[in-house]
Image 1 (spheres, helix red, strand yellow):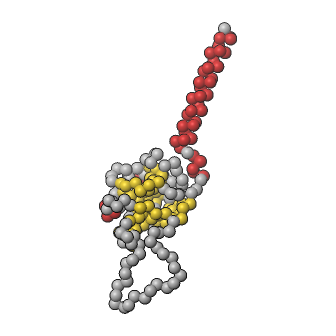
Image 2 (cartoon, rainbow, N blue to C red; image 1 turned 135 degrees about the vertical axis):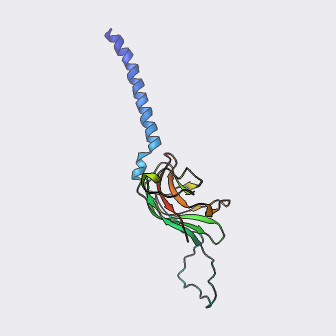
Image 3 (cartoon, helix red, strand yellow; image 1 turned 90 degrees about the horizontal axis):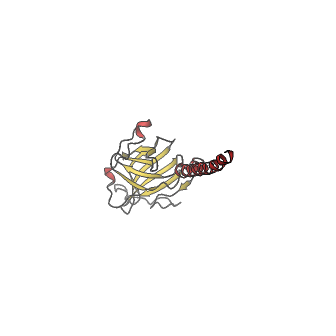
Length: 186
């Protein structure tokens, strides 16, 4: 009898170990906890801005200066939601008429599936603001390029930026905002 028990328990132990290994593997894939300790810094210049050491050309008095460079249409400061998040957000119209959302001095946690969303949702502080951004209209501008630094996200040509009032750093995997900014019109 003792021998029969050992033979039956060996497959049970192997099966239990296989279930544990599969569960741990899935958990690591889904949560990607190592990203909490990995920072990705991205420093992009604003498109259409030419850096020069020469002084700007003088505009004759009484004439308005030409608007040839990027124009900030709206801006705001990021507040923290699920993770500590800080930095500035700008909605910018470029000289060619296209628009970008610019994140400046972004500092947030890294995550498994972070996106930049332009939304029509109000920005609420604390836990009340964690899940509101997918309730209304939003446009995903793509994956977050880095959790630190300054970066640009182009708006599709068919999007009217005036319809949107906020920007969220959104975790698609867990449907939660890491941080968001209300856009105040310039």
